[in-house]
Length: 144
Image 1: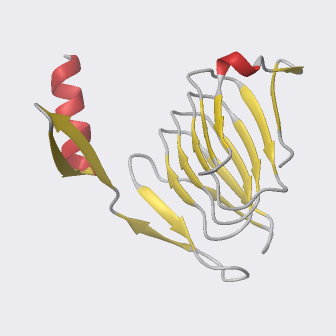
Image 2: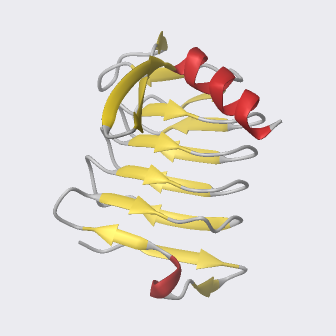
């Protein structure tokens, strides 16, 4: 599987990210990245802010704000604010809604639908599933 991750035009040091090729998950706390996974489908990304993505189809994102996505179909986005999507299979662009999760429609079908992503937390060894809204409110209350 070939992909590139750069920051300021330089390949990102592999110690700054984790790529699990078995489950096709990329994660990092780095920001201002350019990620080219255009030849890889079925990936999950977890990044910080101000990143630019080029992906295959059926990918899932969890990012902060100010990101640009150039994707295929059937992708899911859970982003911060000021993010833009360019959909290659139908040449369509979207400004992604703030504080909402969306899933793109299937190949060559325009549009997307809002979805409710469940978040899981573990307290005293017990797994608790929360709606995205409840999770965000709990997180906000703990950080204040």
